[in-house]
Amino acid sequence: MSRRLFDFNIKEWEGSFPEEGNSRFIFSAAIDREGSSGSGKNMKREFTVFCEPNDDNGFSRTVKIKTISSEIKLNSGSSAVNELLNQLSSLYNTCTLQVKYDGTVIGVTNYLQIQSDWKKIKQHIEQDYKGSHIRMFTRSIDSRLETEQKIISDISSFENFGLLFHSIYGKYDSLSPVVKEFRHMGMKKVYPIRESIKVSALNDTNVVLSIEIDTQSSEHIAYSGSYQINSTNQWIEKASVETKDSYDGVEIRNEFHLQQKV
Image (cartoon, rainbow, N blue to C red; front, side, top):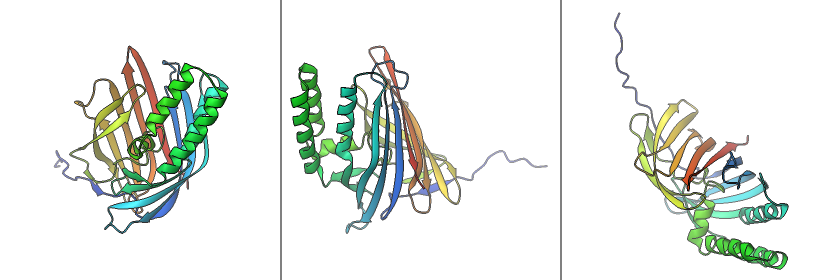
């Protein structure tokens, strides 16, 4: 009896962000799930996504997001802080984005409205709360929403819509990982990350892509995850990412999950 020593059956897949159509998702996250930093929180958002093509030969899509429900719960801290975080989360309840074929956000059509909404929220915060911590808090949000590009970065963070809008689409196989670079917003700083992506499973209906941090990327963060994408309509069916930040001897572990709601 002969025995096969090698398997040369390489699985290949190529996809792009859905050019048109709609879907519904549930996002959940556990930030600092072990509470080692004292700033742990749980997040949940349900939202709809509607895509329509642009007249640019398929380079980008117009993507409208509408939040159905959203909630942030702190593991510790005052109800006032919890309320502030939920108000901030509401800034992205309605977004109109320009999204590249690979899944990355390249524009926020309603960024001026987002900035205007923040000014109103900030005014109420400054009326109701006093002190240096509040001033530092509002200044940090001012900086995050200062320009359209910064709003893109914030929307694309894993705490917001980063699992959906990530350059996960492209051409992959099961043998040679594709290395891509992006900037991950950690708890204390922004990390440049080089991630390796390859096909880990493929059948007639979907593909599973595995992602891991490139070993040369950073010694201060661990990062891994997977995406299951419908190979027919290109919608993400589920995705998950785990990160671990290390600074000043403290480790912060985060989990992010996205699930298509059928």
